[in-house]
Length: 282
Image: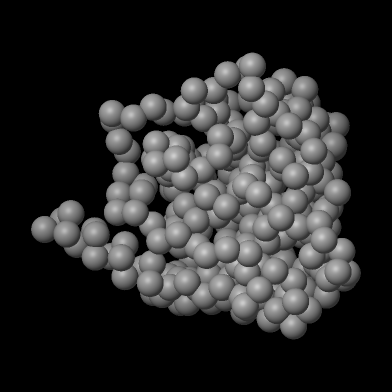
């Protein structure tokens, strides 16, 4: 009964695709068990890295996922995957298990081999998710992370891992506060990112006309622009206003609304599952 109930829940959740009229391709329904550990398949590896942050003035940490069959003789594209205001570098690993989702996708030949970096998006010396997480200094640190990402973390990854360094091989996505960061940083640095995703993006998301001041340039440079949110999420208007603006300006994008979806990992795991399958493909 538990397996049947799980199958029905996943099936119902994924009768939800709402793509813009000019979306680049269809979104795949999730296979039953897409987020369940399979013991008899190849697995990627999760490591902790430490990098010097000139932006913050300290050594900072991030998690890194290398795919099954990882080899230093091969060069990989990179996805930078960001957490929410109440989380840190561990939030995706603890709540969403992207390594499980990606391992299963690799086995099904549905995703391109990639490295995934999960940093702490709170760029300050004490970057723990403790105390008042809405404290002004802590909220401002999420904006500061743009400099840390561009000037410190990305150079570290590109120096120490066999990665492709062109913009077409670099993606950024995140949940909630990290979704807002991803849209702000990705669309604000189209010379650095060609693949951008916001899952349940939070109020830190800039207004659409600030995110995409030049729709023609965005259309030319973006490989993928992704928005998703649960229909029960109180923050859905931030995703909707962005999608409405993009559609009005004929900027190709995906906009997924997930039925009975709140501000939670049900939405974020389904978003990552679909988003990952579109990355780094022609």
